[in-house]
Image (tube, rainbow, N blue to C red; front, side, top):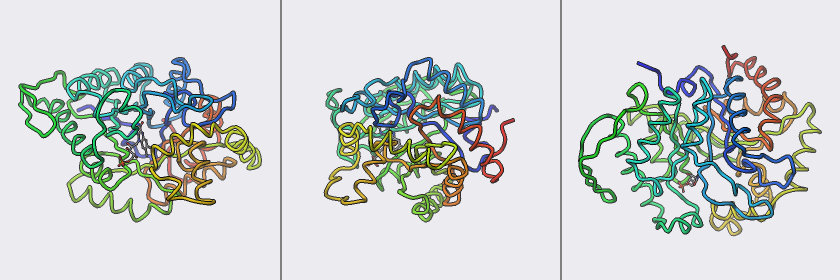
Length: 370
Ligand SMILES: Cc1cc2nc3c(=O)[nH]c(=O)nc-3n(C[C@H](O)[C@H](O)[C@H](O)COP(=O)(O)O)c2cc1C
């Protein structure tokens, strides 16, 4: 049987993904002129380069409108299932994910769209389930944003339906709290007959439990890698008790330059001197409610800078040795992978691939590309 999402289950002990290139400015809420332009040509070039250097996956942001500010941060985005389909048609080994908002896509339509992308990629499509949190998007769609707990309850029904369609069981009736469906069927099945890899980035306990029950990958969020060690062990243990394995990832943004000074100067330039603060604040306030009440002083300013740098992810800044050391720390803390962003992915990935990847190979946490 064909292997599912082979890159996601390869022997590399620390997996790497590129996060957010389907959006204008990527993950960096900055005004610098070299910020990421999400043209289709750039996305294809990037995916092909990432494929060539052995990066495991491309992970998009599911976003329907900009965050405002001077740049209207992420105002241009590619829809993620069609984006993944296009990338899969032009690459060979890498997995491309769709980030799918379950309240906005009917499960029968989504199941078929994803299968179509999956066959284009011969089993390399992956699903990132998003239960939804941005109120302005829901208003735009005129769709009710359910109470937090109910969002995951709805997500569970959605995923159960998609999985059942993909398993080839059908026609079936579905009587849930949210869906009442008659004679459901959907053919063909995913490539090779097995379902695509699934990830979820639920940050709340309800979200994490959803991931533990259902996902192959959980995106968690730690302010420093070591903070995650016990929780990661627990997430894995709980999934194993349910009879399956789960890998845990974090997100981060990278500035890698020949010297530490150059890297820090660049970080200072794109964040402190050129942040699109209004956009970053808007994002932060939607993602972390009551931000100002819960975080103050230096902790608040550091968090705010990270929202400019890369959606609140871990800063990975320095010369190639320092950047490689940070990846080692991430691995040693128990994380299985990290999805990263750059201010300009295409300008910066070649140097990263040339200098950092061989160091990770020498450290034994990644293998050379064959
Ligand atoms: C790495 C990562 C990627 C995410 N990608 C998206 C996204 O593309 N679109 C979106 O609406 N939410 C996204 N989210 C939000 C999560 O799906 C989730 O709603 C959020 O972390 C809050 O957790 P909770 O829903 O359990 O409260 C992402 C979160 C993380 C940590």
